[in-house]
Image (cartoon, rainbow, N blue to C red; front, side):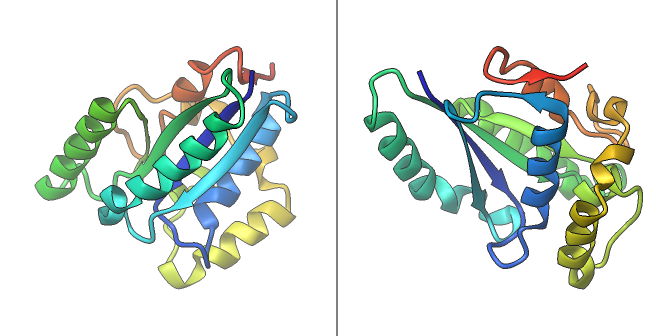
Length: 177
């Protein structure tokens, strides 16, 4: 049985910054059989375009699941929380996309206030995101990441629920001790 993990991320195909952090995380913190687990990024090109990716997601699922009757696909939507604590529209947006994920059987992953603040502990200008992610990878910044920052239960600055979501995918993924 093969499993395809589809990570739908806010960044675009040119920048790929979110995927860099996620892929580094999967490879450093988790064990998985790379011959039976396929990692697939889908780039939203902005978080408000999350609904527009349904056709691409369905196509990936159909292609992968069609290759074998035992294959399955799991979709994980990843969102920044932005100003959830001071802007009602940001908080309302998170509730809306969480409901969207629930209704569609997708996993809901969040990063407060954004992915860079969880991994780098700093706010990064949009124009620097690609460069910062490349530096993070090149300098093996994943080794400096605190795993407890990824076990959030509620939205909280510099935290994420990523490990809670990934840990639920056992035995497909197993967190390294």
